[in-house]
Amino acid sequence: MKKIAFIGMMGCGKSSIANDISKDLALKLISIDKMVEKELNLSISDIFEKFGEPYFRKIETKVLKNAVINESCIIDCGGGIILDSSNIEILKNNGYSIIFIDRNPEKILEEMDVNNRPLVKDNPTALIKIYNERIGLYKKYSDYIIENNNDYDYAINSVKSLIINL
Figure 1 (cartoon, helix red, strand yellow):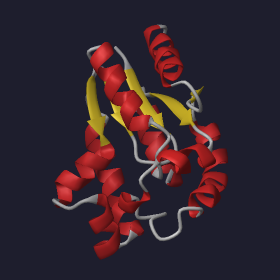
Figure 2 (spheres, helix red, strand yellow):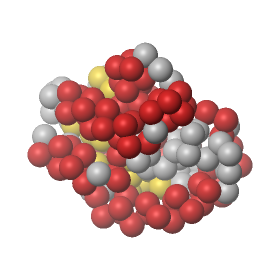
Figure 3 (cartoon, rainbow, N blue to C red):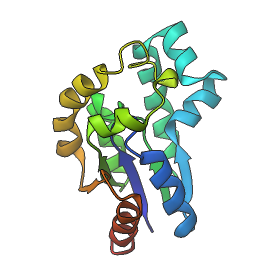
């Protein structure tokens, strides 16, 4: 039984890697951000704009609690899931291995469309500040760290190999 959760910054490749790995290994994929959007019938940007980040984080924890009951799945967590340590406890207490997808913030900025990222759309360089604030938590809470800076196929193969051997 494989229970995997991906954490990391917005734009680090979590969702792409989670999607590709779930297909390759025939594991169910659960996106916390998509579950939040479905729960409120609003986009993440609209949720932040209408209700603010604290409300989003509350709903994020609620949907995470529902997601972890699944057997053998991959959970694609939002970038800020680590801001509330109870989210990590929820994952760990339900047997999830946590993989941190690390990517240089300058590299993220080169490739990411910031318009649908509420925390950085008005100030893209804020991503570097957010990364520096969160990097310690990502490392603290992860069981494994995979770099995704240059070669996507290498990152995918590293994650796949790791999961197969868990």
